Amino acid sequence: MNHDGDQSNEQNDQSSGEFNSPGLDTLKNRMNLELDTISANQLYALATEAMEKKLISAHGYRSGQYELLCQGEFILLSPQEALQYLQRLVEQATDS
Image (cartoon, rainbow, N blue to C red; front, side):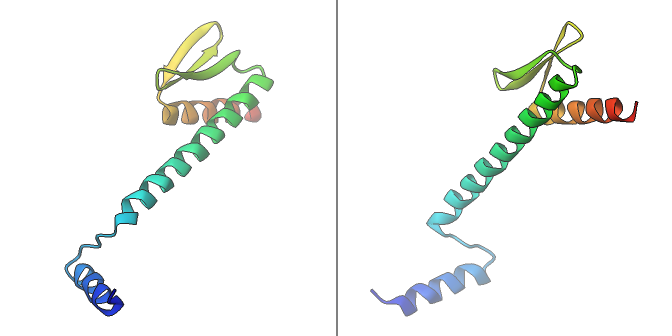
């Protein structure tokens, strides 16, 4: 196996603005999965805090959305929207 040839091909790919590595897509997918996991953990922790403060009664994922039970009403939001909603809710309760 000629490593010099491999390196020159890699340099050619980089100089043309393309970096084609078989592991790059795998790395991107792994990073996205880790970010999703961090976001899900943050959302769960914030929702649990809101429950402890009696701001919501229940929370959890449902069909790819995040469901909150707040004052007897079910609220179905995207995970990002739910995170923002809960952040505002907890901040307002803290400010009061």
